[in-house]
Length: 244
Image (cartoon, rainbow, N blue to C red; front, top):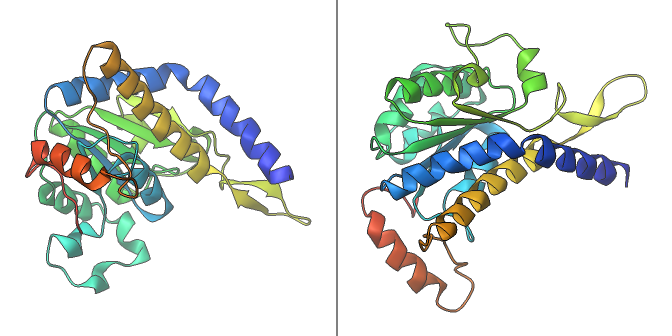
């Protein structure tokens, strides 16, 4: 149970220490949604799982999109062979991903990268800010500050965001020590998912407090879920992508 104990302790620390930036991030989501905007979430590698926490899942916001390097194949017509492990380090990929997405000025972005230094996520952050969108980053401050940027500018994701949410992961991500050196037991996915859900749920709470009915997905595995979801999705026709 050592891993569970450490993860639970870290999750409590993250929830407490990030309460204020979570509130600021939630406020950005509320402003965007009330203006007809969409939450665009991006992550590559394991961080893509966090984008999936935000976009298109039961209990989450309907006005949401998941952006991914796979968009180059799914929407850009490129061959699957372009999807190499090194792709996330290429800054040029960012503009292609952005241009393929149905982005509008009212949209808000959540970019997820524990290291926050790879070329694609840094360039996407730069592009998002150049286009005037609010930007929320979910990253590991400890890990990122110990890394050298892989972007030509030398910048990092945390340098560009309007709100930085620190997932509390240590340098190298793992929290259990191996005899003789090294570590195991990654935590960034767990704490980043927690932060993503904290932001979304606080945004929903704020919308309810304003007297609005938040556009929330039901599980497709409950009675009426499909009908409920399709009715809400129709409000955002051409603005959100589902089915690929």
